[in-house]
Amino acid sequence: MTVRAMQLRASDGCDLHGVHLPAPAGAAPALLLLHSANQTHRTMLPLAEAVCDLAEVTALDLRGFGASRCPVPAAHTWDRLAEDVLDWARSVRERRGADTEVVVAGFALGASVAIRAAARAEQDGHRAGAVQDTAAPAIGGARIDALALLAPHHRPGEPVTEQAVARNRALADQIERDGAEAVLEPWLRSLPDRLAEPLRRDLALADPASLVASFRGLTSENPLADPAVVVRAGRHTRRALVVPGDDASHPAEAGVDVAKLLGEAADVELAQVLAGVAQPSAETWSAAVAGPMRTALSKHGALSEHGGNL
Image 1 (cartoon, rainbow, N blue to C red):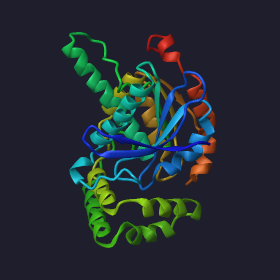
Image 2: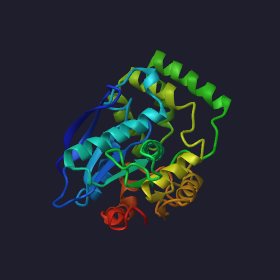
Image 3: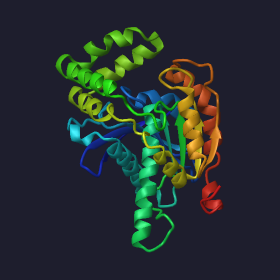
Image 4: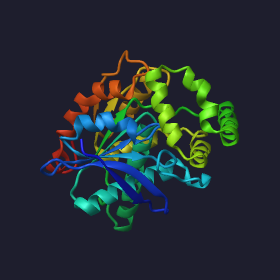
């Protein structure tokens, strides 16, 4: 597997990083992979390896994690994370052409970022359409053609309690004072080694100020608190794969609810391949979702053949 580093200057000036696996022969789709909280692109490499013969793959370090350093608290919002994904989509089409299909796949928190990115693209497209006096969404460099939502973490419509907000703020203060590795070590020791060791590796790579800024900016809000966000994402992409998880961090209900809301406007495949698999390692869940992911990527070109409606 040939991997090379990638860097992108986001539209707000933040330097974003990831790794790139080149496209196979032919007009393959571009696949953007989004990791979960306290992780880096490394978590997504087993999945990248499983599908890189079908797509050009870019595994991202989300803003605040890994090499994508951004210590400014105000720059860490769900809208800004969504815009980062659209910046990556634009960069793909600048390099490969406007007709390149872009598929965005996210694990846990990354699934929420993917949904928000598609919803933002739909909103921006309709705004452009209104200026052009047309009801059709504008399609351009920021278009997301399909979603793959793997073990979603956030349940649509579920608010974050005041107690949780206060607890998260206090934890952010403690991380800022004592460091993420020291503060999170008791939690890491409660996890199986197959999960704890990769998290320790990724936390060691993080910039402490960026990690604190991300924690402060994101943990007080459920990015899917308004279920209409998920519906808008479905309207934009028209095609989605949803793989519910099956443990406390990735509740099955979250994936099922996301699939139902997307299904109001999109063609959704619900794959229950993680049922009964609690706290899987990246290698385990990647192996489980590889089959549905490969099927989804094999539908490359279906949107253009059907005029955008499946």
